[in-house]
Figure 1 (spheres, protein in one colour):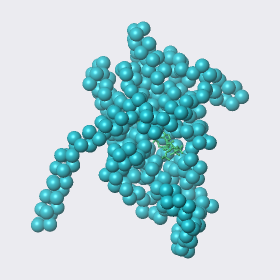
Figure 2 (figure 1 turned 60 degrees about the vertical axis):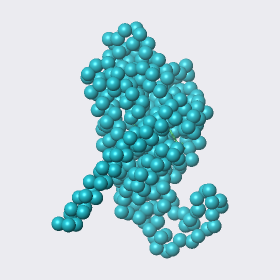
Figure 3 (figure 1 turned 90 degrees about the vertical axis):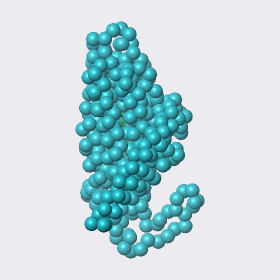
Figure 4 (figure 1 turned 45 degrees about the vertical axis):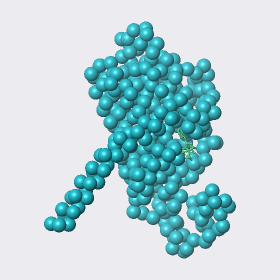
Length: 336
Ligand code: FAQ
């Protein structure tokens, strides 16, 4: 059903001449399509079409980069956390995000691309990472708001990926989602303490943070379905299980009641319950801002990338030492 009997060349090389596939390749493609239709998982050693491999690599590596760059906005607050308890929680959370990046790079490596190649694509600006991490964390309330809203949006998007057709990605996501759920709850708890027991200034700080993060969080789910070039194929292959707009709506529906519990308002005058749809209606998203941020012109894009490159350069001696140790061990083993 998904078989493309003709190969196509990369877009940049222009219109592709049509090349016939061998009978063996067509049989492999048919078996692959049947497995996808049956809801089977595909493992790294299984045959897969080139474009399936490329699509997975694109999504998993972008996801891994998002986790690693995503450590930076909250990481800035570790040394300024208000109490020992909050510092311990934040340290654990930021370390978890680093771990998520590593599981995901490992899943992407099973598709035949090295970690060095992926990191190089990030550092040279060729690879994307989530738009959300290009916004600044101005106050302590931003840390709780990231937990509540950013991790909340991340879970909404990532739970369906636990059923992704590519098994190494699905397995990584099961572990990641368990940890993201703790992240969301710690963020909500941190904000609730400030809203319930805090001063007026602290409550105003929370409201200000929610006002700044709300719209960028809605953008995290990606462009509207009718402007999402990768959705149709991603969904046919079972890489993506739920559309960008459906997940965005689910997130809004889940979050409105949580905002009421917290005692904050969401910065959208058009937010209202629609009895007929059984969902919350919400206002227009500024897609021009989203595309600007994704193209590199957000408030913190340059700073985030510069920090990642600096961290990579600073860690060069660790990589060199590890390689020297591995060489020494290999020589010892050969001599024994
Ligand atoms: N930012 O055709 P679609 C987290 C790009 S992890 C930047 O709809 P697709 C944990 C998209 O790549 C957050 N770019 O694409 C945490 C594509 O560009 P390309 C990350 C975006 O793949 C919490 C183009 O626009 N999560 O938060 C964004 O079908 C707290 C057209 O879009 C994941 O990566 C965006 N927001 O759907 C960490 C989850 N949205 O590649 C620290 C896995 C879209 O053609 C602290 N990924 N683009 O050049 C996915 O589910 C999907 O890839 C989507 C995009 C839904 C993000």
